[in-house]
Image 1 (cartoon, helix red, strand yellow):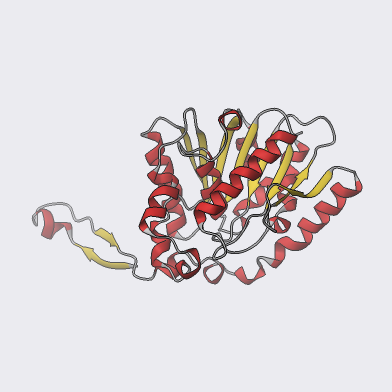
Image 2 (cartoon, rainbow, N blue to C red):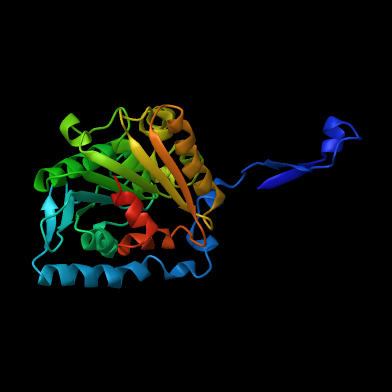
Length: 296
């Protein structure tokens, strides 16, 4: 919410060139992170993902190139799907889904593996226990176990990507306090956070926190923007120009901070993309999003 304009003639003297200064102050944090109601036709999602995801799974299963519901832990949602390319895999991509840590599972996103599969890479997609059954710190550990399980099944370089809360979890894997074993962490060639939430503290001001239960200690321990990057971390922060301003800010925030801490960082704001269609590029091997993810 923009609460007022300040005239620079008042601040700097009446002889100065007039240039209004904008003060930005958020009073409605739920709206700041609300996507569907602020996207034209936003009620199409998540249903719009269901059919293409199922069709992709069916096609890979028919080709003998899908291994579904692989257990990586003991809890019911500790399962991942692994999609293989037609030839020997060049490496492994792990896609981590979003949903503000409290919605969705791996089944909505299978078709987003298509771009990496066509480029010769295997793709793992895990589900994880959702809030409020789990805390975010618990989810971090689960995703670490899922990445480790998939990495043990496919040799070669490892690329991580995730959308929204999944962007948080992907970058959490390459922070200095990553739950990943050193040997797995050393294999990570690149990470792309897509509309990621990198600072959890604003979430504490939303109604969602009744489920998330983030407190100050957890925000400090689980926010990638408040942590140091792992040695040699390489990350691209990717958002859409039609995102809510908080997602654009969160996108730039991690890139800004981690650049100052020695990580290899790039920032992209893709034109004409909003929070739901920003992931579509992953389904296309030629799209810059897929090419960025797979590039060394």
